[in-house]
Image 1 (cartoon, rainbow, N blue to C red):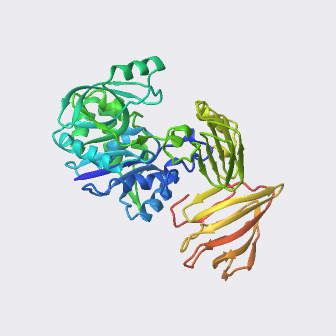
Image 2 (cartoon, rainbow, N blue to C red):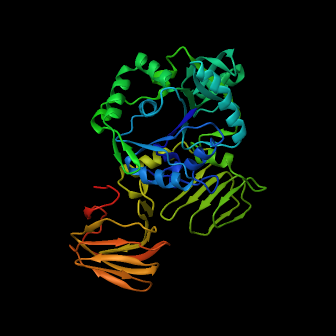
Image 3 (cartoon, rainbow, N blue to C red):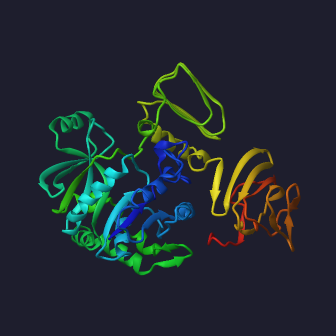
Length: 463
């Protein structure tokens, strides 16, 4: 039986401004009406599976739980106190399941167009993994791509090949040489091996990672739907990828060819590659009008976007940012995201629309001493019991029913009804209904930052 291990901790900065630190690409529906995380889980449903293990960070835990529940596949969700790369994450998963099970390690942000071919490749790898091999899946190199690591194959073994060597991301000439020589595959970052076999190799090559992860798992604590690792032990763990820690050192690495339309969506041009296009090669998502435009990707959230007589462009319009770039010159996208972070701009981390475990809010307007939000509370959800030192709030119900605590009073508000919450007043907002509650919140005061929250009680375990 196979234990799926879903690595869902990436940041996806190359797809800014759509993917951001607080809501990265694996939680977005980029290629279908399902998110990338959901697509990852659904594509393996035909395999013989044990309970899945999803590894994510503290901040994203509620996105993971909500999205997996929506497809009825929650499984175990393990929270990393800090990011330590793929080797520790996989080690934690291996220690948290049956040692006889096969671990199928998957990134939550890959696209695979031909699911049947992917399943066939995994089945090819099962016998090899059961025999003790550490299987990776290699994508046949079709062009000299500089963004991927490469795998050089050796002698044939069952449905795969022994790995002759792993190659780091090359320069153009080296990548061209690989392509001309043949026998080189892109490293997909997908793995299959028995849990006990992986741990044996890790103990041999990186006993420091093994010990730190054993200590972390030994002191786990349950928290609602989540499993928390021991923070101190995990912080002591070195940060290392599985490639460096194990795969490049073991003598039992085997690569199985994967010809299934794999793409890691590492850039906007990669997303353009895998999306359906019109007769002029354009991908259009949202409200856009094109004239004379060719081979471009246009995505707009809530604005009419017009593109006239342009070619090979990426145009992405979110509620608070616009990206315009040439499709073949996107190397600076990650640098731009880092620059915005360095400048202290909130757009590197947060969207205008921010998701919370109880629902979401959209900051629709602001000025000196005021801010306006549209707040959506999910059925049965409740914001924390809290108060603010510097700001007052006025709530107006747009739709649904709200149960409000305002100081010593608790009461219901219906559509078009409102309440005023003075500064330093204990208050909370809850949706007792069966449909989303929407309110308009008007904040006034000398300071309106999100850190002006004194949280007194919270059903989601937040500080």
